[in-house]
Length: 388
Ligand SMILES: [Zn+2]
Image 1 (cartoon, rainbow, N blue to C red):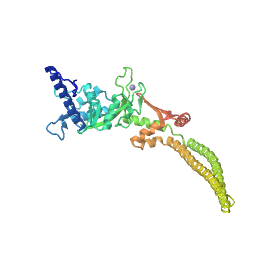
Image 2 (cartoon, rainbow, N blue to C red):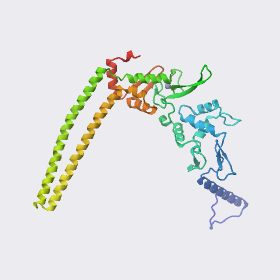
Image 3 (cartoon, rainbow, N blue to C red):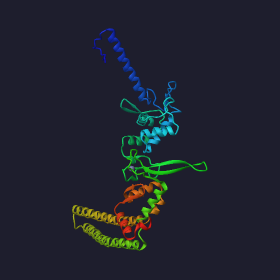
Image 4 (cartoon, rainbow, N blue to C red):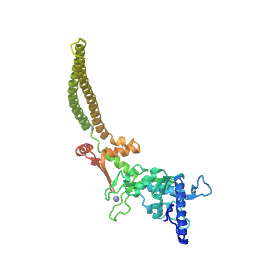
């Protein structure tokens, strides 16, 4: 590139003049483009789903009425986390979306290109830098980020959960892949349609030996309830367990009471000392400096003792609440689960067990400590076999 400065000697051959003009033109053009980007408008051809409108300076890039719905649907489908790029193209074709009349199907490369373009969420990528755009975004930033994470193979659990038990809550026992949900529209005998939800292994390249892991939503729900019911202890054991829990808490209580008494005694001693010190000072028996020094010392110790008393009460209350809550949770797990909303249901399963595995016929839960102890007691004493 020719840099023109006052000291530059400019040789006047036609070639270098042409070069100068073309470089300068390029510079000028780039400057104009950069300005446009800074104003929030992509200065080049609008991506698929949008259309350039050079006649409207207020909105030079508009949403394409026919193409945009396919883009929106593409992000929706991919963000669910169980389709490959090719699978998204296939599904779009099935649903009747057309890429271009001559080239109706979205190939995986096009899908990937679109899903990676932040323009759809409102940003402009310009020579490696991100600028906020003024065009109407087609999707929200959250969905874009979910797709980005899925594309990079990061945490599959971040994604939106549209079916209550999908999203990695359960794993396939054969390959470890997340169990994912799918909704299938089935024609009824009376001609109407009904949606059925299934949960299946999300592995798209499963070996031939991989059994078919696919459950009806209602069967999976029943299996969960059965497992949670397995934590239930018979009434006499429950009574014993509560008694033991209360006894251990009352031991704890006796100990705490002792500590509290010691602290209370120390507190009243300190109050008396302070009062006596003040009397001596008022009677003129100690200097002001000595009085202040001793008084500060007593005040500091009093504050420490009071702080300790406050934390003692708190710890004790929390411990008692927690122990009872944990036990009660195990005894009502199935009812609590059934009576809760989807997010609480997920949370409850995550609190109670570390692993949730599905094969073609059974659900296996790995109980978290201390629930494993309750489960063991329930199973060893009173077989779960009678349930199944
Ligand atoms: Zn699998």
